[in-house]
Image 1: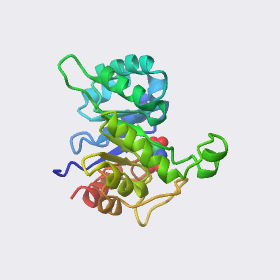
Image 2: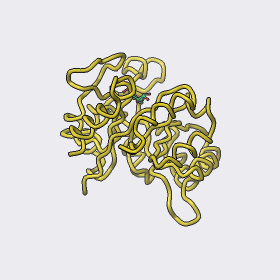
Image 3: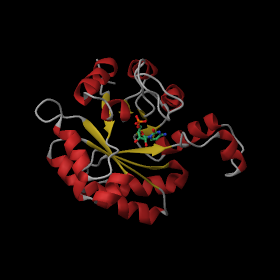
Image 4: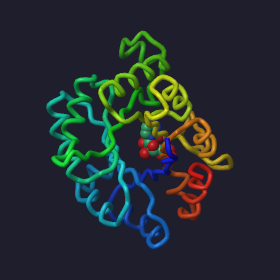
Length: 235
Ligand code: C5P
């Protein structure tokens, strides 16, 4: 596959003023791909997506849908009309839900945003998954199985830890996209992330997109930090 690697900035801001202030720093110099999560979307409403899109950014709308197939299908049709580039859902909703989501996302002209699945959240430990969710398996096996289900349902890829990307590629093929958060510079702050890797290492492992938040958003020079990620990961 041609190199489509890209850096996605996690815009984890609580309101429109903060996110626009951040994006202003990039005006006229770069047009980064951005991730909008639940906090900003629920706080600012769908208009925030239209406004950021109108500034020329690609958007990964990270709302992680999980409901009955019919509800997810209808919700995805709404998100698709916002002209986002990537949407996601929980693979735990089953293949039926994922197929319905794809149907909902597909626009009348046949185009649609990419659809990726969350396998097991990286915050879920193997112990909790086994004891609370009664999934008597290793995390690794559930990640592989959920990724395979997503592939069989026709999805484009998964969100996963960079340390799982290699495993997903091995089991689902090189073309199946891996979108990986948990990225830190070798000389940077780790914060609350546990299983982390550098942009350079994520490239070697085979991630297609890295999602980077605080190493860019909390940097004194976000544009320079973004460019450093691009330099390490995309070139
Ligand atoms: O600031 P930081 O680089 O840690 O941000 C990572 C982004 O990726 C956040 O928006 C976080 O919610 C998201 N994410 C994650 N780990 C996952 C799934 C999503 O860090 N397993």
